[in-house]
Amino acid sequence: MINSILLTFVQLISKLPLPVCHGLGEVIGTLMYWIPNRNRRDSRTNIDLCFPHMNAHEKRQLLRRSLIESAKTFMEMPGIWRGDPRRFLDRLDRGDSVEKIQQLLARGKGLIIAAPHLGSWEGGGSLLSIAAPVTSLYRPPRKKEFDEYIRNGRFANGNKLAPTNPNGVKTLLKALKKGEIIAILPDQEPKAGGKEAGIFAPFFGTPAFTMVLLNRLATKTGAPVLYAYVERIKGKACYRFHTLEAPEGIHDPDPLIAATALNQGVENCVRQCPELYQWSYRRFREQPDGGHSRYI
Image 1 (cartoon, one colour):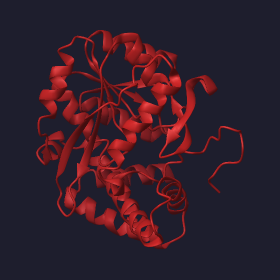
Image 2 (cartoon, one colour):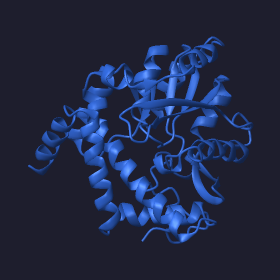
Image 3 (spheres, one colour):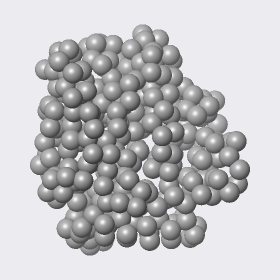
Image 4 (cartoon, helix red, strand yellow):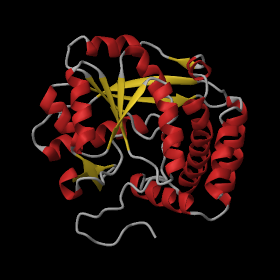
């Protein structure tokens, strides 16, 4: 019953104009800043870990803005999943991103897009599918009803989905061998595959359990890696698509060197607009010594 109500609510949100979604996100994010909750608590922990040299006022400002921007991200997602893609694309400043992506694809090795939880990270797929077929690594939500809703929306936007299991990895490899694009969230803690799926590498100076899948795909196929994120322009219902070159070492056969480069690439993106990062994600849940989680 509750899931049906939530799904109906999400469907209603998908029909709202983007400025209205952003206004609601502003209200929700502000409430999350003032009312004690897990997202606020986890965001504060991560900001303390990643920006130890910030003063208390700067941290509070970043915390407040990040909660607001994260709320905007989630409020606009239903419209991206199930709405007309042109509603988003018409507001997106693409710069030279499509040309850059096509140049990398011309090498014939496919292309790995590393897209952190930064800005409107769901919206980037609509643009990528203009350049070439896109297969995204996908971790299904716990609620089956939402899984079907999201899948249908992403398929409609031209994206194929690869589950986080061995069959999904084969799907990603096939896409690269066909010269297509695959998209991976590089700052997502690996869960499937156990301890062999990741390695501890520094992220903003703190050890974080980091995936090795992207490096394995890159070294196996020779596919170039490009970081990308969609910036939400402050005060306007419009966006800008950004791409950054991957740091040296991303193709290194040493998994620690590659994972360190992977995290450095995420840092390079986040430092451009830290208030747009999803700081509520429990990036440091696993500890290298097996100790207690940093999150209460």
